Length: 374
Image (cartoon, rainbow, N blue to C red; front, top):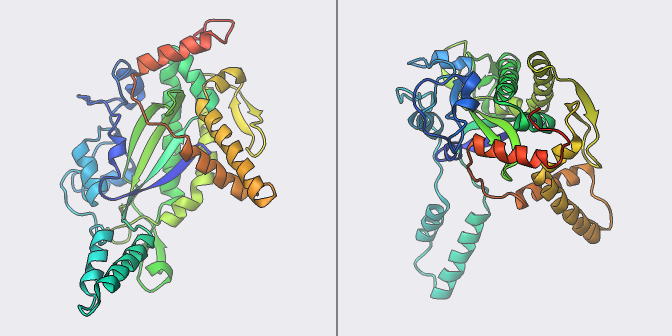
């Protein structure tokens, strides 16, 4: 999967996007973003995407820079990024666990003995802690990651080729965004049908922000973009702002990932002249399409996260077999891999693209018979 989805909750859920962003100034050209911030530690500021921007009170230009205040209004409060006006109903609020516990304790009868009161408090605390955490959904982080061979090629290329690869990646992402707006993104109206709605209706478009990142948490090359789609859309039929029908978006992720792979290969073939080939990735993993000519040994060198995950996965599989006496099913194996991914996740460290590129070329030079850039 080169496109993944993550639900973002309202409040401070958006702040991870800003942790690595360079504080820049001036207009930003999306096509040259990765080279403009080449020498600075961190990643470029976000840029606005989506045709839903035209429906805002003060329209925002496509590819213009996203400010922290704008992001806070949109994803923190469900408001117009510029004016602060609410986009539909405000986010629902939910009583925190501690307040729920205290309210129930306050309602206990005064006739309880000290021991009975202690027992009741423990029971109430346990019941409230067992309830699922509920928070309003502010948006959806669709992360677009180029295949490993593309990241490897991008990592050791000259600046001009790096820019062309980034352009192909951005163009493919825009193609997928257009597909989502045309065939996937809808909202729901009515209140008496299943899940509180009676019909899906068309929307004017999506409001999204895009954040480019260079590397994995292990500082290996991993060119990817977080496309954060706001959970606020404007219905065509009446112009009202409502939430996105998230079920349709979740159900479409696999297809969107395949579409991204296809259009990315087209854009790269046109801009860089790449050819593609299939490569096996081992038991329990699907066949991958990779750029022909990129050595598998170099891709493996730049896949330390994958190695860590595979080692943790093998250990968890052995524990599963010892406990259950059988090999895990495909579904259980996928769950084990997700667990391994979380267990081996290191803290993110920010580097400049210049520093990262120098390190990547040094590592590549130790493995290749020729100059990596050449």
